[in-house]
Amino acid sequence: MKKRAVNYPIRKTIRFTPTEVEKLESLLSRSAYCQTISELVREMLFKRKLTLNTRNESLETTLVELGLLRNELNKIGVNINQITHYFHMQADPKERLFFVKEMIPHFEWTKAKLEALHHLIEGLKILI
Image 1 (cartoon, rainbow, N blue to C red):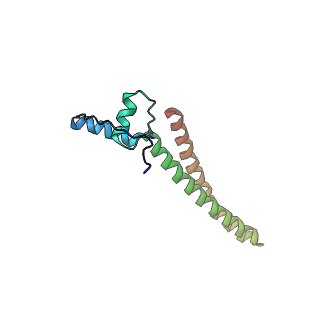
Image 2 (image 1 turned 135 degrees about the vertical axis):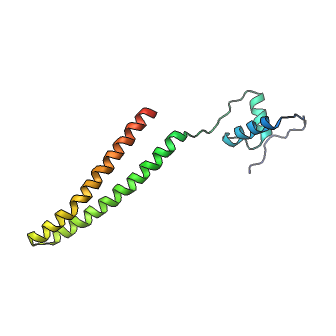
Image 3 (image 1 turned 90 degrees about the horizontal axis):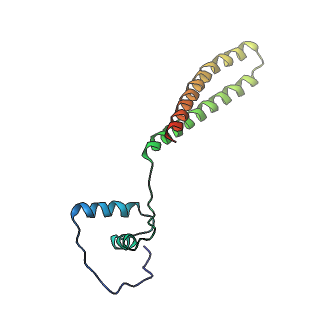
């Protein structure tokens, strides 16, 4: 932890109720610069600009879903690339037809995931 640059020689005592202490601790946990409740109270008393870090919880679930969709689409893409590689290695048309039939479910999964992605993006438009 960083040491204070200013020495505060005069000490004043102030009393708080438990709910007030909870509010102060909540503000302190979100504060970007204050490390103690004393610093927080001084910032508030002397009307300095108080910077709070906030988190938008409504976007958090959407971001998790977007990450999961990205991973699933990446895995489907890897599978399609592997099937395509084996397709190009085959000279026999019957064997190539087999690999084409293997690819169809992957394209259907991709379509379903893209629709889910589109739905998430539409939900983001509403939130923003």
